[in-house]
Image (cartoon, rainbow, N blue to C red; front, top):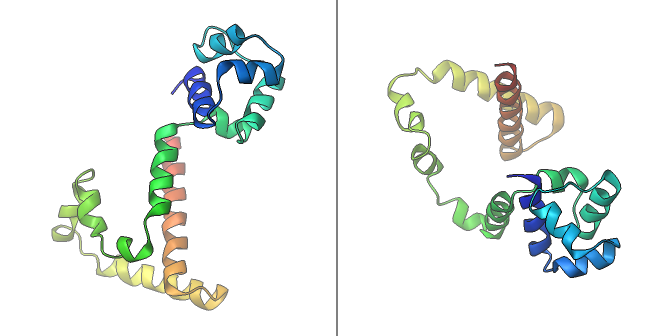
Length: 152
């Protein structure tokens, strides 16, 4: 998504018109339009004021993606009792077929044993419960994956 579209989506999400934003920033409605059409860019001061007006950080405004926000809000609305019933491997297998096939190809026992040991270590060292330990390991693994992906 480009910056102009991000500005447009953030403004719409707050329910503001171009005129209202222009008035609050002390610029013309045409200036807001040009920013949203990527014809010009707001300076850093105006960008910070836009972020504040839209209730976001400057980083969030620059990276604003309405689809991601909608997905996060949908996830937040689903109760744990429902998410516990979902077969996540099956659901994610539609996007990542390896999740449906690797069990027949990979001897998971040594990996499972190593992960079990890491989970137990987190539980003992930090007092985490099983779920929290699993989530911490998942997050660590995701971070490692992102770093490796950046190196390519």
